[in-house]
Length: 100
Image 1 (cartoon, rainbow, N blue to C red):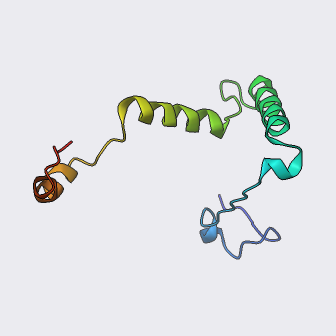
Image 2 (image 1 turned 90 degrees about the horizontal axis):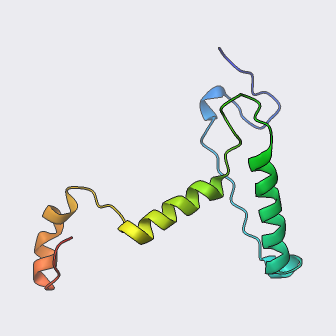
């Protein structure tokens, strides 16, 4: 199935997924951090409690996944690729670092 993307800024179907938008906002400039957190929390709860369009597929909140990932990294550290200890073994030895 081909979807027409005409009129929404993409020249071809091939360009889907190649764009990113990052917006950084200073909450202090817009009512303060407490007000921002309150509104963001309220919005997230509204999304979590919304009836899903497709049964069994609730609204996904990126912050939930990001927090879970962050908490896992704090608890278990960042997993290294299996080749890292071998490749960096000489560097670890040179500086007296125990390999992970």
